[in-house]
Image (cartoon, rainbow, N blue to C red; front, side, top):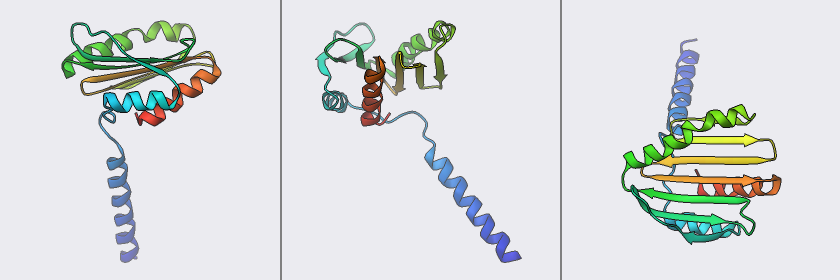
Length: 151
């Protein structure tokens, strides 16, 4: 009986260690090159965007009819990225009012409105990535892009 308790304790301890190890604070850091490569793999056209106050680098990617839109924003600091991310979180109430399913965490927002619209925003350190799609096929492509980015 004592051996069974020891084995059970070891198994439980191992399970807790693996579950904690599986939880990451924040998301995978994606470089500008990783973003461009993943966008091209899903047939999006990539262009360098304009920079504004608080933004070091901006890249956008779209399909031919603009029904898929992705952006990579490298802020001048982590604080600037947090401010940018807060802009998205402040505007989720109106999406909920329209019937969208909105899931939020400290660094991610996922918005789904049936097969009509999908939006994903993630912040990792000083970087914000947004991906949105309108229409069933475009939503599939948007989710494929997110998977390729690993965020």
